Length: 403
Image (cartoon, rainbow, N blue to C red; front, side, top):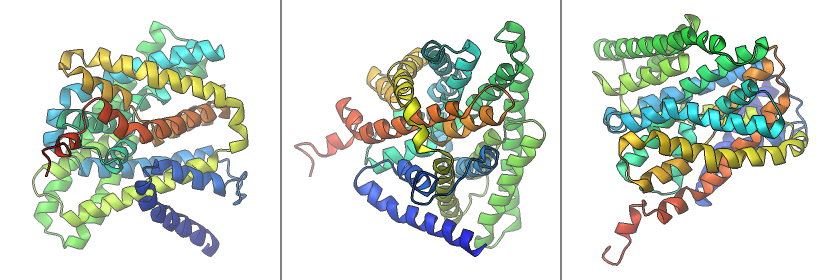
């Protein structure tokens, strides 16, 4: 036990110490966490043999719940209202269009069935809230309010749609029945239960926790663990009755942060720190699960699919979905470019691998390559692309009249 505790605590401490260094050199910090995990793995100096996809999926679910809880607690209702239309369009139809475009590319490139291609597209269809937030913050970018809010709210609420699509398509692929109207119609009850129950339990749980927080008058030090316990209870309870626990826990945090007695600032800081630890644990675990020597065989395919996602699927989906929002083309172009992938696609790629269907770990490795490319490309160009499109507010402050 002491050996395991030493390894875990030392890994987390090292990861935290590297965060300021990453910010200084504008390097994608999540890639650093992945690299630490890969270094600890069987191909690295750590030499740890770890191939437990099921354990990673279970632990990853808890980490993702903690990240979404913190994201909800850190979101202001005014931001949600301002970005409701564009973010909602991107989180729903946008995710589906992205999955369709990437799925078609996957099917053509690997000569796979359309159902398997759409499954791959669904896995990589959602953007990552934590990765997007960290890129914008560490890049020192001051975006106009609307595109910034749209990116952050979209990435916070699009995960349930991607999770629903993944679960539905895994069932279709595993059954071997292929795509049909009957098969797609059979997923509608799942969609209704996932989104409907997640919405109801998240709002109700957040309202109840917020009300109790104001009524009980807890000592400041107990507010944080109270919100942690009630948030995880909402997440797990919703999953047990067939709803989307991820949607529920995000809405739980959103309601607590914006209804009734506001949580004390130290509670927000507590959950922010917990979210960082969850990000570290999740990415190190995912890096540990990957065998780097096996990535060479999928590197070219991953590069082509990443290009299809970044250069074609995401921009087309954004421009198609944001037509009703009447957003300036420069803002649409930036949102279309900054479709940053992170932990969720790698996490979702585990599910079809552990299911009894035909999907192999090659599927997981392809998703891993795409996420690494996205973190590199988007993390390194977040500031440059904003500057090129004239969206970085610092240009106005640093101009001839500044100071």
